[in-house]
Image (cartoon, rainbow, N blue to C red; front, side, top):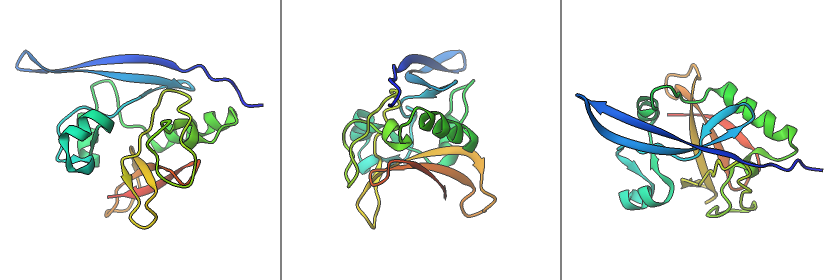
Length: 173
């Protein structure tokens, strides 16, 4: 029998201060999974990369796409990009509750592919950000701060795909 999960949700307010003037006040949804607090939405800072090439669609739907150095730069003070170990702990925690990690984290809609939509059990609400060029399957990518040792792809990412119910690690440029 699978565990019943009551999401623990919250918010975190972050303000940028330039020359004593508040320039950017952002409120982020958060969720608790195991003993860690995770952002439950994407960062809200300018970038050159947007889903479907549209800033309006990016802001309204899923957030923005960030290169690693942008994501690392824009992480609010007191927070950090998760490590590979953080994602491994997340995966182990969800599996102890007898759920597939990818399914538990995926949003309940907007996934295209063979597998079912997600359950969004914790309020993490992982939306798909792009489709695999070969299979057409939806996927979402999450940067880590863990280095790969490969100069071409220096940091690991965690990927959730529509055609799988797990998460998998990959190096990405």
